[in-house]
Length: 162
Image 1: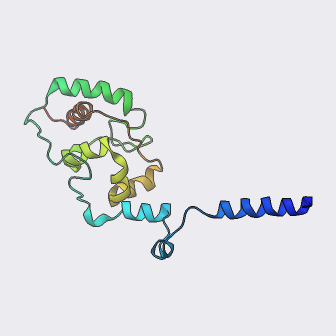
Image 2: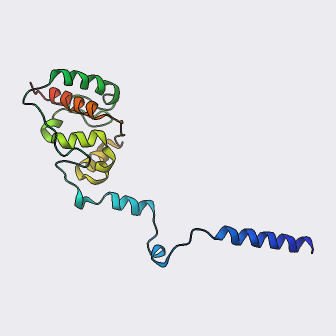
Image 3: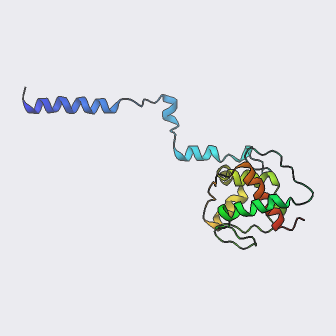
């Protein structure tokens, strides 16, 4: 056997071996999975509740008056995780200002958004419109349930709840 024959055999074996593996069925081939397909499925607005948002909070119990201790803890947490992008006024910094947010949004929506913003950014038309203004997606800050609830109370304090 000459060198050319050995090279041809090795090349053929390598070529055919590398072409195997990920076999698609006829159905799979007709609908390839892409990031666009995944994004379209994730942004299906038909199952989205704009009053509650998307997440684990179905109800959030608020007191008739402000819980000052929670608001103080919320101010501390917001100082670490939120105020580099959000002002307490209605002025935009990186993200929108917080003034009036508890009057515009239900507590469930706020809690769901601040604990897991990605599905809501993908589905909520108002959040998408805000994203066009701010140009930066809100990152998931990994807030605990308690931190999120404390920040909500701080937002209420900012909006004048006594």
